Length: 621
Ligand SMILES: Nc1nc2c(ncn2[C@@H]2O[C@H](COP(=O)(O)OP(=O)(O)OP(=O)(O)O)[C@@H](O)[C@H]2O)c(=O)[nH]1
Image (tube, rainbow, N blue to C red):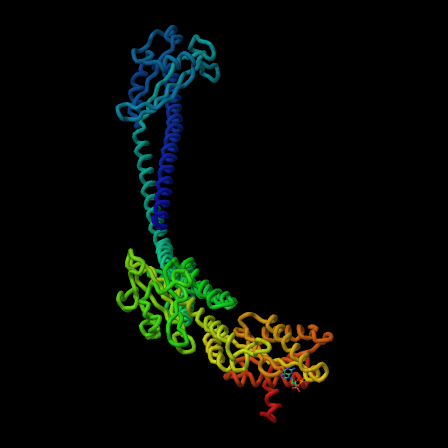
């Protein structure tokens, strides 16, 4: 029920109750008034009759009392007046007139007990007030009753019965009640109309707020509430509109950011807000996923984890992962959660002729969910039973298709997978650079990109990997910290303890450096006793912390050499890409400048590059 209707009903109920109460109170008041005034009138009339009868007795005209009583009947409003004798008076003066005999039970009772009786009787629709009042013998005054009557003080001499017509009084009462009803009804009506006019904007505003909130719950913040008044209700409407505007802008900017990050606008069938929240959650989960796989040791581990994610999070049981080999052939990595499986969902020819794979050839997504026969290499009935559909995603590594993820689903659930594809792509996007890094790392193990003595990456590795590193930092819009480290007075080790001792120290240092950074960070032997550490996704403060941790670890470390132990210190120069320079190599140069400033300032310290250092180095520029 609307607020307006409720208020109307309340007012109608109140007005009706007031009306009923007023009618009851008025009728009761009129009845009380009628009884009181009629009793007084009857008593007065009875006294007049008594006085007249007494006078008539004294004057000897008592025989003409009947005429008096008949004339009395002509008094307006008096319908009956009758005098009756008590047995005591009849005994002294005889029975009297016929009409002076006791006429009914009330008169008999009054003569018996000397108490007056009053009542209202309805005579054929005419309300009548009747009173029967006794005449009691009294010796007070002159003349008095006992002078003529042979009775005792207090005896009942007779009674008078008088009836008054109440129809006039009733008519007045009814007229008054009707006037009250009409007045109250008119005022109530005015009050209801006024209240409805007051409540109308409240009710309408409340209804509109309800509607816009319903829409907001579905992610639609465009609707606004009409501001009908300038009072509190108008203010509520204005506040709700401001809130909606804020939410609309907020959602728009989140949608834009999500679109930037995912390359896709979040679009729910009927709730864009929920779709956006889903995508933001997935982005966060994908970022967590990336952190996890960065710490995985091998590519196989990463593929395995991704396969489990497809099954557990997206309910996808059928899929294939392929990798491009150096000779351009494809290799099956996993099929439906199993490694070492042959080619199942594609023509095995793709393994020896990579171009046969459409995703590998084209370098973009192949949507077999909406375009059923888009790829002829796909085998839709590989497992028998229901025909399958597929969606293939190429993973670009160093500018070429390094791997292909093939998602497979029964044709009946193709639409469902199509809805999940954007979310799966977020995970693939995060996985791609990690896979590439792992791939490079794995290749490195048997390649010349590794320093033979320490097992660390070497300068050549850096030259090959730097492009990917820089692209990832730019895409993620995060800082890449560069730490250039150089052992202090290392020459002395060789000179004092021999070259082998120097080698042992360098190996220990390499281990120490690896232990003090994350698995996803890169430790490179940059020169003889010079090391480079690259910290992705790291800002200046965090980089200085890591550098200080390493410096302190080296300072405290006891290097074992033939014939004993020795202690060394290290100096560290820190620079940040792209904060310090837009090119990686210039940033590295800046780290070098900071390192040699650290050496100048006494060694065994960490120095963050500052532009002033570069100006000092270059004579003020
Ligand atoms: N044992 C050993 N020594 C090396 C290797 N590579 C470089 N060195 C030596 O490291 C020393 C580097 O010395 P310098 O560059 O003069 O500097 P430093 O003695 O470390 O003094 P700082 O000014 O503190 O750097 C040289 O004596 C090199 O021969 C190596 O692979 N093994």
